[in-house]
Image (cartoon, rainbow, N blue to C red; front, top):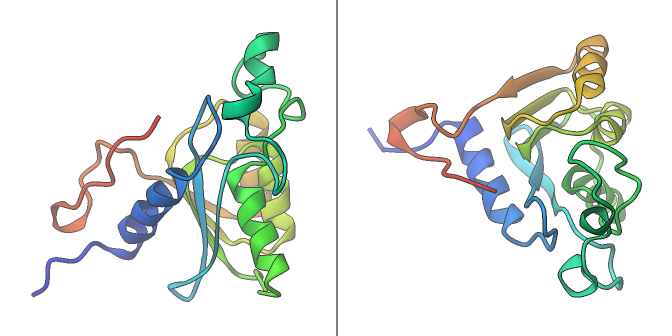
Length: 163
């Protein structure tokens, strides 16, 4: 028998690689939209196309002392989940019935976008301090699964750490 990761581990490992492209100074997040075990699109958090990256311009949230999980609108970057949805739309790829694999649990804004794009399942590694997002996920009927870094994954594959 081949030593292969299960599907959840596989797509979470890809999300971690996608997160390595992030230009956010606070948190590197990667997202992968999947349907029928096929990747539809990927996204990472950072400034929109053509906009100066936070690593060059500085983090406005840091300058203003805004805690993580609050006032998402005060940021030059787009979240990984939104970027994955936007990339699918840009390419004309339907997202109805997709699953999201993400390094971090989605915030309330991303959760609402995921509901509206037809996402049916969210698998993430790191919980996010957003109680409202969790309530909305429960109300929507979307399945949400947290697989922590320290949990064993099939065949001893590691999904590793992330900031």
